[in-house]
Amino acid sequence: IFEYDEKTKAFVDERTQLNGTKSDFAPVERDENEKFIYDSTIDLSALEPTVACHPDPGNRKLAREMTDMKLDRAYIGSCTGGKTSDFLAFAEVVRGQEVR
Image (cartoon, rainbow, N blue to C red):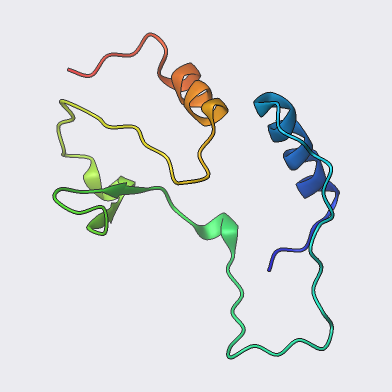
């Protein structure tokens, strides 16, 4: 569970404004008496971009391991929670670029 803080609030507010969705909600907070089967802490700054490889999205490699791979086509997708703004943000990143 990620704690809801001011940085998270700013992110949610910005995203909901971009998407035109409602932002009136009550964040879910941890119950101090909760019990978990296990507790794990993930250093999000240590995560690296990954690439889903053929023929199954579960077949992943670190992007930095793919330097010798020639890219001749690409598929851009999103998870169930994907928003139009996600695709617009991607379009800004690749604007003017070509896949050869």
